[in-house]
Image 1 (cartoon, rainbow, N blue to C red):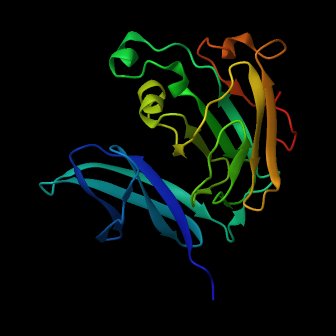
Image 2 (image 1 turned 180 degrees about the vertical axis):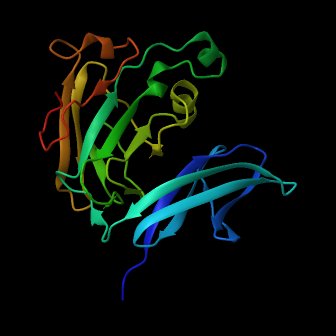
Length: 231
C-alpha cells in the first residue's frame, strides 16, 4: 500500500478570518488549521502523484470570502529525510541593524529580535525536516515540515519582529532559543540521528562582508553545494 503524502501549507491570516477552505473541483472542504500565533497558520494538504493545484479561500465570521490563493506543488514520489547534500544553511542574519523608531514603538527595541537563519532544499526531490536540529549557535528542532525542491524555510528569533521588518514572504518554521553571536561562531544542523547535515562558520571581519555586521545585510550562501563553509 502506498503511503499518503502530505504538503505543509503555511500562510498568514488576520482577526477577521474564521476558517480556510480547500477548493476541490466544484466542492470545498474546511481545512484543519493549526494557528501558530495570532497571524500565522499551517495545515496539511494530501498530495496526489505529479502536479497538484492547491486552491484555498479565507472566510470571515459572516461567511463572506475575504481572500484566496493558488499554488502548484509537484509530488514526484517518496519523501526523503533531509541529509547532507540535500539541505543547506543558505542565509544568516546574525547582526541585524538597530531598531527603527516605529519598531521601538511596537516594542521591538532589541535588534537581536530580527535575527534569522534560512535553510534551502537543494535536491531534486521532496525532503522531510522533522527532527532535524541545531547543535551549535542556536537551539531549535524542526517539527514535521516538508520542503519542495528549491523551497526555503526560516527559523527566527522573534516571529512578530521578523514579519514587521521583512514581511510575510518567507515560510517560518518556528522561533529558536538563544541568539547568534555578533562576533562570529559555528552553526551546525544535524538530522534526527545526529548525523551532520550542514556546518557553517562565520566571522565579523574580512574576508567576511562588513555590511552584514550591523548594517542591515545578511550573509547569503553563494554556492549551493556540500561544502562545509559558506563563501
